Amino acid sequence: MTFIQKLKNIQRKTNSLLCIGLDTDSSKIPSSLRKSKNPQLEFNKRIIEATYDLVCAYKLNLAFYESSNGYETIHQTLEFITKSIVTIADGKRGDIGNTAEQYAKSIFIDWKFDAATVNPYMGKDSVAPFIKDEKHCAFLLALTSNPGSKDFQYLDVKGQPLYEHVAAKAMRWNTKKNIGLVVGATHPLELKRIRLMVPDIPLLIPGIGAQQGDLEKTIRYGCNKGGGLVIINISRGIIYASSGKDFAKRAREEAIKIKDQINYFRKEYFG
Amino acid sequence: MTFIQKLKNIQRKTNSLLCIGLDTDSSKIPSSLRKSKNPQLEFNKRIIEATYDLVCAYKLNLAFYESSNGYETIHQTLEFITKSIVTIADGKRGDIGNTAEQYAKSIFIDWKFDAATVNPYMGKDSVAPFIKDEKHCAFLLALTSNPGSKDFQYLDVKGQPLYEHVAAKAMRWNTKKNIGLVVGATHPLELKRIRLMVPDIPLLIPGIGAQQGDLEKTIRYGCNKGGGLVIINISRGIIYASSGKDFAKRAREEAIKIKDQINYFRKEYFG
Image: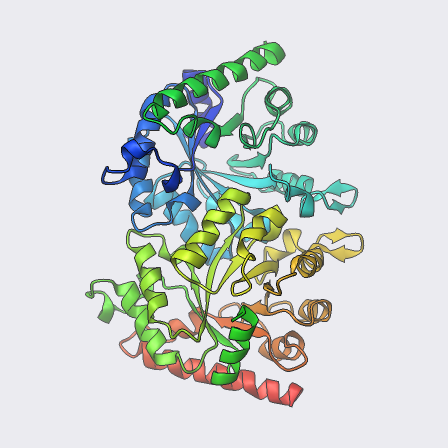
């Protein structure tokens, strides 16, 4: 099954565009879990158990898994996720050919993620190993949600901002229909223009929640004509909704709230 | 001691600008080491033992350490490197503030590297956590050595290629004198212009060896006025010089050869 098909299936099944980001910071794990053998894994399992029927995807931020058992924690977290749900390795990798191959191998072969975020700065051969197989997707960074997105991504190149050149190249490289783009919810009007450029590719959208992006405009401008092909990621806003024993229950409540908000706007704009 | 000072000290002590890249691919480790408990670590130790008096730095390519004992292998490899030698984590990280913090923590606090390679695409807040302390250095990707460097890095922005804008921003952010740039040896004329823009910052130069960059021009155009502040990285050309039992001896011979070539050109152009 292609990545796009898997994404469409799960979005239909759970009626959800929500992705939960497992940016599981060991220092923020509730004290009730600290005594378990692998608190980070235990935390992930509890969050997944409480939310799996509400999401289309889980995204693991690889920065938070660089520890002595991080490699295994990623592996075991993925094993715990229902096979129909999309999994995204968020490492923003990007390197020369033979090194990019190695990163892609870890992500797709060893850990068995469905998708990866990839930094496009090093160009086509740094992206190629991530788009070999149509069942895997590479989400290229186009316009990121952070303040530093202003430094280079908006630079004017022949009348167009750099991030639109990334979107244009992505379209050209997308012969297997398995490239997506990362576009921050903090830039709704830019998102609108990008969606016009790439009507049929999936967009991974961070920046709602802790980064205060605009959900209504994100749905309105980010979705394709069918009101889909968008993955709205929330990390801290959901997984740290409570720091107490009720963290999983509170995460579920937040996830329901956001899923419902997303669907409210989908209905409003796409019927 | 600042990073720059440490780099200058070791380059003087070993009279070498050579950095050996420990891109230690488990599948390429000589069969004589395969039976040891941690073949990758054993390989690194043997290479380091055979070359430590010939280098200014070792660079670990983090892609090759994503395995169940990878975290520990990095840790133990660094412990084995003489404290006066510069260590570089080559992961080309780049992410929003709180995630970049996490990557910087792994690299500088947990593993205790001196420097890291950083992808600049996400801008200042993605770089900031790597340049907090003057004893650590962030090498920003400017012009990389691979074919894909043509895709975005050369795009014309107000009459200047994008990579020169990266160099210009790097200079502006360099208030603690701990930013460097990555410039591939496959682009000698561009290197010349970059060195004119940044006379006093360290350049990390990959692309000699397997990627066939030009060593003479790299030295001539890459060094600062004193014939230094350049780190020439070679990975595969040295560590895989032989796949037999003599791999460490052959790595040493290659390292001597390249170190001598570098110094021959330094003498020719800088006296």
